[in-house]
Image (tube, rainbow, N blue to C red; front, side):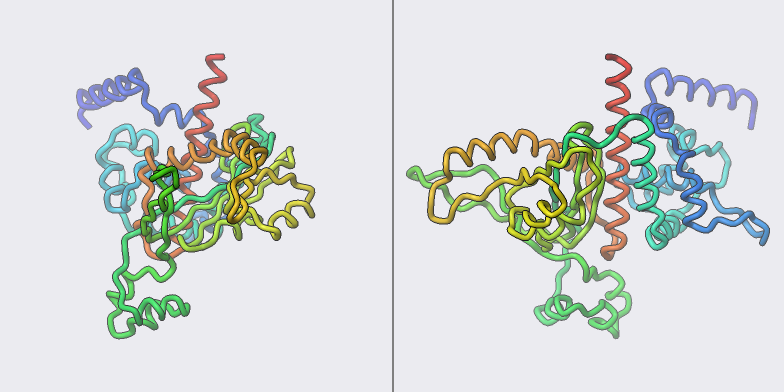
Length: 357
């Protein structure tokens, strides 16, 4: 490279730093090298003794997945953005003219992370990193779920029934493999009930119901720091209450907050057997008005439970959360990466606040 061009490039990067490159803050806050051993072990990286083109650095590839999650980019768009943005190249450790990963390499790395269980181990490793920094889960945990849309599927009644019966896309469309490859048989339709309650003559009108096709992200956060401590992914039609026991995480407090979707005799018994204290909202008695004491108790719980809504709002507004891939395993990878990306942002928030305190 021409020395003059190199000098101009360094000046440009220094200017980015002076203006507060957020990726430099991310690099300083999160110890990415801490993940190297888990990535190498989980993905089976060798020592290069067999020859051939060396693989890309696993930590750099993991950073690529985090950037992709933060900006909700397709693999093809991610390939372009790595080459286009100097700040991204610096964060990933690439220099101008270096070979960079293409979309197939990115897709293969993410799939390997999912297939080998490495992605979940990395999530756990970051939780250990939080412990070392003093962010120990305490004050109880909050459980909730959020719908994440996917591209809508247009199927016949017979095809929909075959999907419900558990048949694979290859079995349903054996003569059209290209069509089968584009069909998501794991995602489901559901109705999202919500909106502001409207009244007529003093009586509440039916709530607005919007059909949504896709998946559901189930998480638990710790009440004090707001980090996502556990997460699971199901189809959009899966009942929230069934997932409570799957997202309960370690916490120094026994209290568990959740909305009425999680209130059931089975869940209450399960929590009690594990000496966990239920702070789950109570339902209104059928055909009766809500008792005043119960309404006040629910309102008090809502002030705490609402914190988990901020997590989903951050992911949807900042990350533009949307499932582009086919199948629940890939959706799980997408949402696990979104949870990690959120936790990284949350750690930066706490570290900045501690620095200015």
